[in-house]
Amino acid sequence: MKAVITVIGRDKVGIIAAVSKVLADDGINILDISQTIMQNVFTMIMLVDISGASDNFSDMAKRLEQVGEGLGLSIRIQREDIFNSMHRI
Image 1 (cartoon, rainbow, N blue to C red):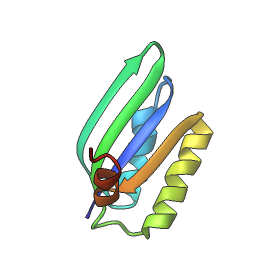
Image 2 (tube, one colour; image 1 turned 135 degrees about the horizontal axis):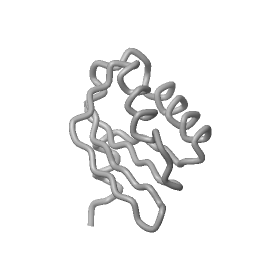
Image 3 (cartoon, rainbow, N blue to C red; image 1 turned 30 degrees about the vertical axis):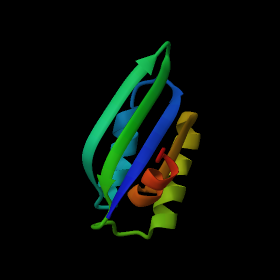
């Protein structure tokens, strides 16, 4: 199963490392990643494979949200099918 992770906030050192560590610790593989900085605002979208995750989806979402709060970022995760349904024209 795949999921989409979005990260938005003020740019600072260690954002990608912090998010990647949470994912690696839970056995989640990053399939694709896109990130950019727009006038000191960091934005990142990741496509991840959560089929090997050691925790359930809800716990994973809470942990990512906590990391985001610690860094002053918004970090959200959605299952790919829900993300696609919400963004279909």
